[in-house]
Image (cartoon, rainbow, N blue to C red; front, top):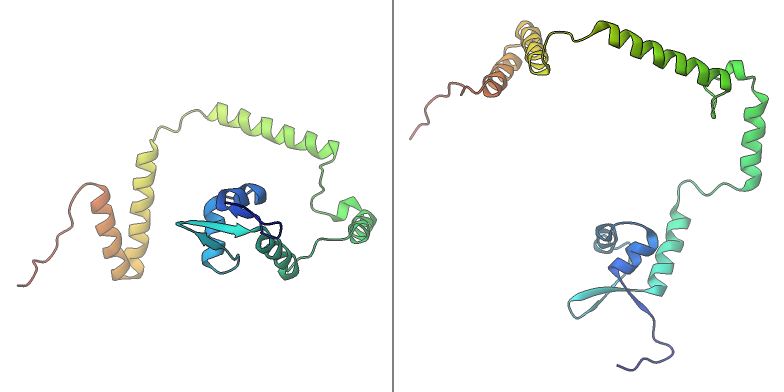
Length: 168
């Protein structure tokens, strides 16, 4: 097939996805939603380069949060630097003192965990105990909720809840 100089270059969905660093399914969704125009070539879908450029330009115009200018970034930094560190509840990157404090807390947490040892109950039993607690809580507040929890509990224990026979 001979191409003329004014023919547009057609891209595959995979080409566009690779260029935009997204999954091809994302591109197909945008095509289906009408956000990105495409053309059919036989049974396959292609995107004109001009349509892709238009899509990318429209995305910038629709952006709720435009890219900040270097002046705006400098202004934010100036404002943040003017606030005393003690007034901020966090600082990024953390200071040396903060990193040291975090390391000590982590070491203390691991030390306490190692001292405690196993708690003597399996995860399965913990879940069952939590379900029983929930069931008791909802038994006191409303009957409908407790029936639902009983059915779920019976199903989780491998028992079938009693069901009324179906009417003919």
